Image 1 (cartoon, rainbow, N blue to C red):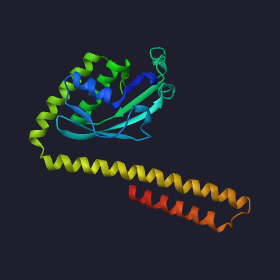
Image 2 (image 1 turned 180 degrees about the vertical axis):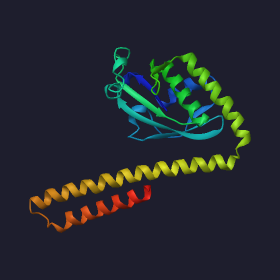
Image 3 (image 1 turned 45 degrees about the horizontal axis):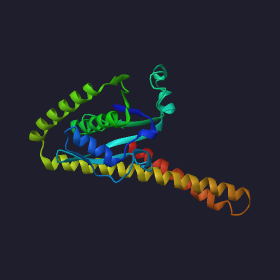
Image 4 (image 1 turned 45 degrees about the vertical axis):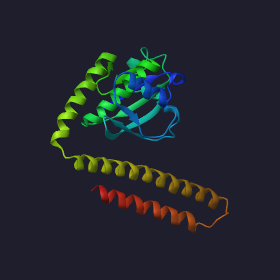
Length: 216
């Protein structure tokens, strides 16, 4: 599921401003990831946070509004004054859902963001977000009594490890392909022999085969 905040990038609050606003709204919430504003997170794809003493993280992605609106052409008119999109993805975790809705509520108050539930192309009002937060916190409270704390922490560690492995894989792929392209250019200019690009190509192919076999 995806919730998108469409905003004017120039109106984005700082982390401190957003935390203070959320505190004003009555939620015990804090960001654990170090950043100043949402537009300088250096392509990070998750933010650690804590709500009511429970630590978790939310997946977050940043795109120009025009890129996102290519998937929602009928909404372009409603969002013509927005140039930036902050997308949150989430599943069935009620704590994560509450955090995303709380952040979105703060962005509405500070940045006049327009919140879109992308899966059903529904705009969420401030009132709807508050109700969603209440429902998530109530459900999470019931879950906490039935799920051991150790299991919750283990799932959190596993999710964080998986996301780290995903980022490392992406970096490795970029490095290998960059080296391969550079090697081909240098080989064509006869600066290096053909052995090096061939070796890099073999490494890329072997890595692809291994990853393909792991998915089976």
